[in-house]
Image 1 (cartoon, rainbow, N blue to C red):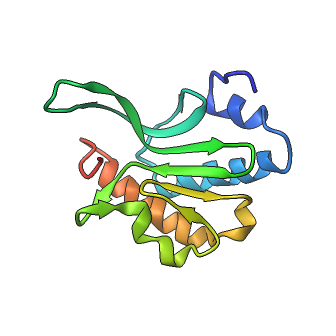
Image 2: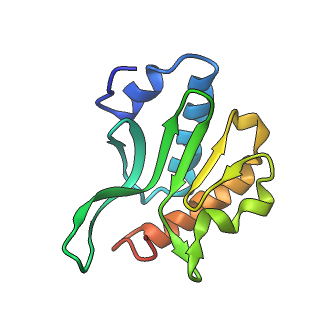
Length: 137
């Protein structure tokens, strides 16, 4: 897929049925975390851009939430931590049909996951990551 310039161009460039799933997730994220600005983050949709700098001097740009359409699955990246752990992992038991990594929730289709649980995850990330990116790791 050619690189998109805007979130809508990214969505429009997807084939069905993936387009509908990603559009629904985009709407869910925008509604549940309205303070996180939607942007293109490389080849992903990003929400809540921020700049980071480590004590080592390494720095870069990231987003609190990112959404990627991959060949076999949709990946929802959540760059937040809570209580010393990764926020996405906190929701693993409530998303049994998704594959959960430290900061990533992967699933083949939106229909296999509980969208209300995704909404809670995104809303919590929005609360943690808005403003000065507190809670973002």
